[in-house]
Amino acid sequence: MRQLILFLLLAGTFTACTPEAPAEEGTAETSSDVAVTTDENEQEAAWTDITSDEARIATALLAAPEASRSGAKVIGYNAAGELVTLREGTNEFICLADDPGKDGFNAACYHRDLEPFMARGRELKAEGKTPPEIDAIREAEVKDKTLAMAPTGATLHIYYGPEVRYDPTTGEVEQAKYRYVVYMPYATAASTGLPESPVAPNHPWIMDPGTHRAHIMISPL
Image 1 (cartoon, rainbow, N blue to C red):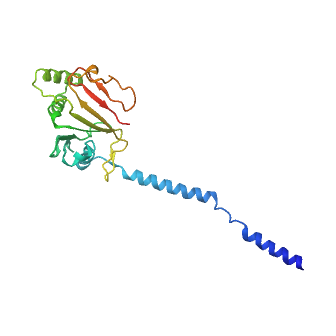
Image 2: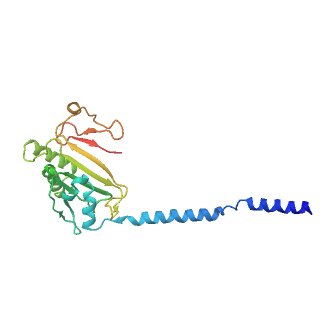
């Protein structure tokens, strides 16, 4: 009898120490899958097509330095396809909104000293001139001083990407990134010490050296 009682006590002890069975793997995986799917759906829902003037203004301003966005002027194409002033500005920056007639997204923001040069390019393009023709005409006009070229150091900020969708909360454009251009008319590799092609990712280099369009290219990682 004493041995039977001892056996029952030991059996109860082992039962109490047995760990609980783990949750079924299928159930855990299903919960995880649901969470991932929900996150993906929420992220997908954040992107909206850029179809309104308000959206074009918001996304164009992201090309400007953050501290200057509130006072930057914005020009762009309205719903009728006309190039107009979408918003007046109070500082030295002019932003050009994305052209809805082109694939992908491309907004730019530049110093106002570049406006004569940029505006002339748009004017010649509207006349049907090709890019080589535009370059040749503007170069001749800069040389004979009928077209003002911005002084050395004028900057162009570019915000571009393959998608034309944005987050209305932040203005961020899907997959967009930045590139910067610093105009240095007639500068060369010899005068600046910069290479004429990038030697490494994120490395500045000089493009169109020796011409009126000479500029430093900077493409952040």
